[in-house]
Length: 384
Image (cartoon, rainbow, N blue to C red; front, side, top):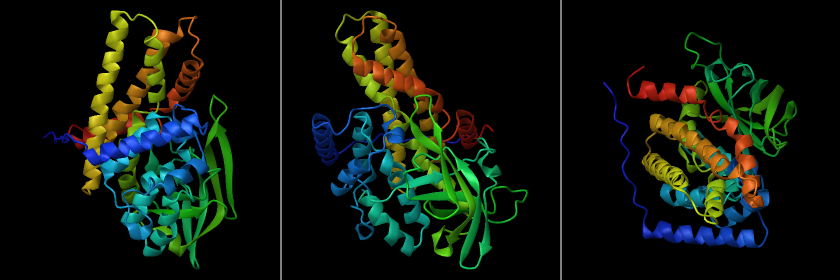
């Protein structure tokens, strides 16, 4: 029997719209003052710790968290509005992104009181940053096959192995690392745990993986007999797989899964307005706008479910699958409608298009490949 994937239509309140105008004005001021230029994929590739600190000072990090941990006890939809505007403006948010999006909620759900008190207030102020240690060089999309392991020693764990595609690890202070803490059994999901690794610790080596653009935000991280204290275990030893999958719902359903190339879409429309558009141009832009609206409604629905404590694995996978396809469609539309015309003089358009096209190969890989996501969706609706 096929399971329902219904999401309710979300109506944003007047309060959230007031917040939208507040963050929008802040971002306009920052651009006018030369603090940043809009970029595609800004949540992944544009690291600016000073900018993250500004957001923390304004209460726009850790927005939904309890006040006793440095949060602001605002709704998930209020946080969504802030996130949406930051992405739409192509703001440099990579520094705090992973900690605010998923590491903080992970600590709230599974962490100890010590971990919450130590990490959450500093994340909410934009003072410390986290990377995510999931993928490995020889595992591909089969995350359960990871070989990074931790052996129990006096007072903690001895960690060995490596992680790959770890965004921002060369800047981050800590990494939440999925590793094997017991012998592999027939059920490969058993015996996995999450450890908080201090990236300045002895035995940690971070090596860059550069993009075709020459940018450096991906890394490979090696662990050689790295000591991790017992109080840096997240949740329960052996429950790492369940905890990681819950964490991925936050990673796969946010507006960053369909707004990475939105700054290019804005610039594309700006260029097209300067000349007479034919029917094909109008239909192409109309289709993109309709898809954007649909994806936004889906993503808002997932945000509402997360606020209610529901872990929408299937719907989050669906948003990510459709969203990353849409991001590439924007780049393709810009290339087809404008870039082939030699008289285009808009430098920002050309720069954003180049970014989008060069980053596009990674859209359907990060956060789970298309094939993996469709397998999750198929199982969820009962056809696999």
